[in-house]
Length: 440
Image (cartoon, rainbow, N blue to C red; front, side, top):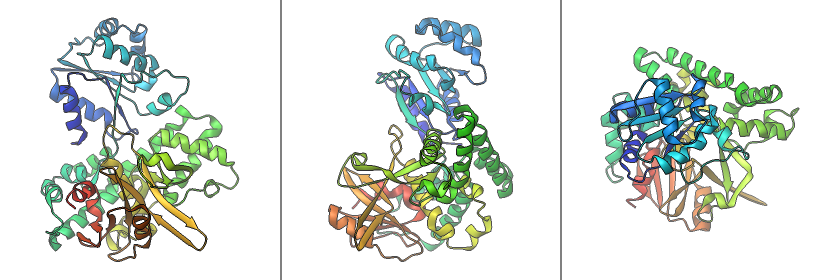
């Protein structure tokens, strides 16, 4: 799988004042594969240390002196580690907290050595108040599932992706290209962005085998629960994980998970699923300006699942339904919101913590809600996801009037256009929002 993050890794390699790098993201999104591919292509040698597979490597970090660490790693692996020529990859680093702490000393005492770390359950260590993290001496990159653009390129549809990267609003999209992109979008919604599922489809051309791989991935996530939850918490995690696909893109209420379980128990389970990267929260905010999280309402939020393909499999959505119906309306429009949210997360800066927000106004006798808020050139813009080609935009217009937003974005199956300060994009162009807004 080719990933856009590879270009960021190459830029990082070339930096003179580079920091050790930690790649964050859920299990099975392709962190290890991407790093090892980068190491093999861009360095003379790659030395991989997997703390989960070989926990004895933790003994190499009894000292924080990089020279001693490197010497012990060389003896253990039988490979020379040469600064400037070797990529040292510390995988599943959450299994060895001392290795995380040692990263600061690589920055201070051996900055010429390229060091990258990754971990599937890393967030549980990083969010632990008792853990002393080397702030300012480590850089983060975030990796999620394959975006729609990455999906196109890995499926061999480079020309379609290139077309989307260059199309202008005034040109529009030819009907035959629109139909082709819609066909690819339906396939992406079934297959999703998990690299293992994509690879299975590439090798077999079978959506049935692809779905079997997705089921296997879901089972892998559930088998991880025991690594970060007590026996009681495990029950709540399992319950929420099974209910989450049906709660996507709706206002989250703990009682909808289980009226019998206390809210604080469900809240703890939700925090754990978020730390594992399996669920993302979309918080309500007033949207008055930047940063959006400054006016975030922590008790008012919606959720997204990690991946649209996994969501469809977990929710047992019939594959034929995605081919025979208006995909924007499948699952009451929730899949469309899941896709848009997932694309917005994927199109963010690799160096920034992925965050999503929405806007809701509640007053007696009137209410308004905008599905997503998007930041463009220090301006907050509203995004609405609409079923079909039509649909009123009263909430968007309310937001634009109250917040003096210069334009809004409508995502639907309507043609690409710009009218009355509203940019209309077909679903498959979500990742082009930033580029097209820059032309207006």
